[in-house]
Length: 347
Image (cartoon, rainbow, N blue to C red; front, side):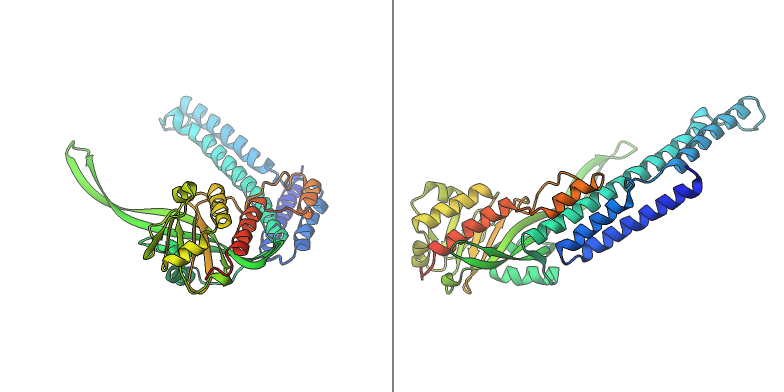
């Protein structure tokens, strides 16, 4: 392929990738994503850069290294460098070529992931919320114990608005990711270059993530309940229902013992156990306004695996067009609906 044609192909591909990147982030409807995949189909070429220029550069570097080394051996070049120095020229060129290839390939795969994830949001009625990450964490920490973690940083770095259509209840909810950082000082003993034992301290930042759902339990306002399966937060009154499984999963506290007892209907206790079995280190808190926070370590609720990508654009288009339900998220939402149905009029 002539150099001009190679350059034109690479430039067109670069423009297409940039357009997909920008328009995926800006998309407001699923059809906009389908239109982007149509552009890939219309490109009629694989989304791969042509590396013939890089290959020529690598060959020239290799030939140059061989010629320079031969000149040195023939004493035509007044230097006495090690053969390894000459070998570094083609090796350096190969490393740059391989790094460029891998970075571009990963970029294209990441674009397919981003487009597919955006389609998942549309399919499941999830839209990015407008908020301030650190301020939102402060607001939630006033309501719920789970956000009082992290001595260095607290922020909500992901927040989506959603709508659940249930058989008996329908409700609005928010899905979030809570990022918090603990800062600690570590003292280490080490041996320096002179063999002397030294002591040094350094600051370590440990990053953690919690995920969760925020929604209203309108019939449970006026009292606070905390089913803690992770954090140490607790209220004044402890209550243990008869279920040993529930008591293994949660420490139940409330601001009123009667409120806790009324909450623990058999179906409610069973549903809480099901949530704990689905979600790692699950906690449930309800504040005096009836706002509920279900928090957990599990990061998979918004996950779905794509089968195809831009290397098979026609098949990828069918996958984007097809409705994909986030089944794990729906299971959790269905259990929250059950909690709403069976915990109403407790107080």
